[in-house]
Length: 204
Image (cartoon, rainbow, N blue to C red; front, side, top):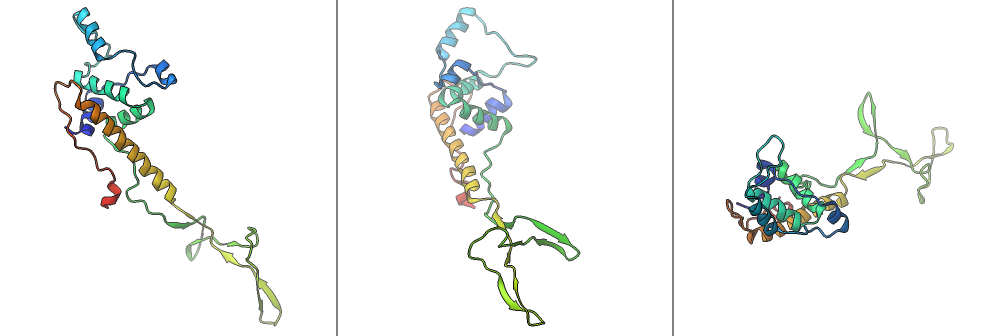
């Protein structure tokens, strides 16, 4: 199965968990002081495996091995992200339908409907905007304020770029886990080279 499906099976179906070593997390090493060989030897000496689960069956050995690979290959923040998304069966939100749109900052509602609220350029201290002189019906020169509609971009291009950068980071995490699982001693499943689209926004 593809690496994403393998992760969803391990964390979602089998409910495998990451082993968080607080000392290593603070130190930033991201690696266990012992490997799966040490765990296998310890279990062989015991002659059995201790079930530490609470009210449920233990995860499959392949699921726990996948969780161990995720914990060892990725930094802790990346490992928890990959595990949480796999457990929920989701991918990072790369804002597929997002387009930068210019929207008014405020609205006003009256009997004629909903309209964008305007502002006086002079009150906002905008340089270069001068009142417009004109003559009224009595011939007196008056100066009309220059009014405009304050707007903003929603969503901003930087927000869309950040969301898609996060998706690319997640895709890179899957690639690293896939490479590590290729050489892992899995008994039930085999991880293929299939990956989610690297840039799905290019396919829209």
